[in-house]
Image 1 (tube, rainbow, N blue to C red):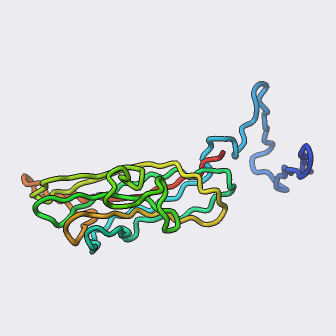
Image 2 (image 1 turned 90 degrees about the vertical axis):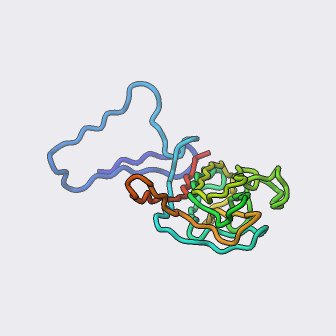
Image 3 (image 1 turned 30 degrees about the horizontal axis):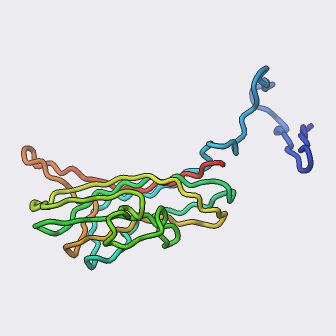
Length: 203
């Protein structure tokens, strides 16, 4: 026989068991003190989504123009408009400029920047559209660089949301993502990876 727990004003939760329980009786002990945790309790992680890029590829761009990093995006659908989305991103990259270069990264939600109302590439206060910055000067050897950031977003939505990493560079024309580094002693290739992770946080 199922057990039904009625809500204070409306709705109910029904606990049921299968007709046959393998292994005999199962005892469920209710704690004598404290309260039972709820999935939707503030701060709980309700779901996690991630895109992990392991392949090496290049992205062509025009200096001074924001462009998406191919594939570095992930979608999530919040269960409540009050909940927040915690975003973590990591990018391993190299710019094909032999003298100096400057790169600024940004985070978008459904193709719109989040974190700052200003997205002008010439505004140094913007940084990662208000999230973080990457700056490398006189990098004549074009060595591999990396950047990482996190951001707590309040989308106020229960629709599907796509978070994506964009970048703008001052010089050059090609960004290499996950380009391998070479160990000069063993000539072993160290393959790098990039990722973006989103978590729904209960309000």
